[in-house]
Amino acid sequence: MPKVLLTVTKSDCRCHYCQAGDQFVVEDLCPPLCHELWHRLYPYVFALLNGADLDTDCGRARGFDACCPDGGRVWVHGEAVE
Image (cartoon, rainbow, N blue to C red; front, side, top):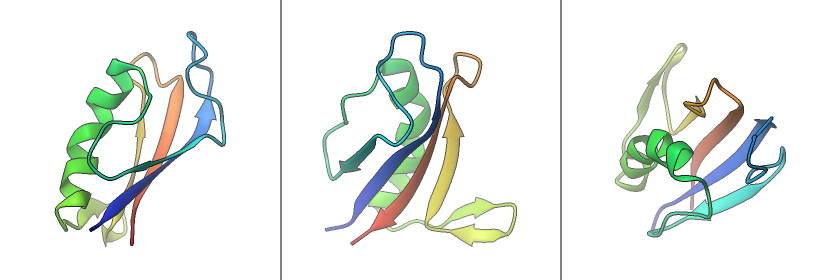
């Protein structure tokens, strides 16, 4: 079963939920993230869990970078892993 590794690459989280370097492996349940950040990440995670390649600046990839909707306070890199 595919998995998605989420890595927090930058964090200035005002609620201190995420710290730079935090990692979460997603298989079927959402990780312990705030709802706003998970809402932003979920479409990408869902696509990767179902075998999609995502559009990037350099073509297609099995990963993504996304930021928190709260002014980009938290940045996350996600990638499909086996």
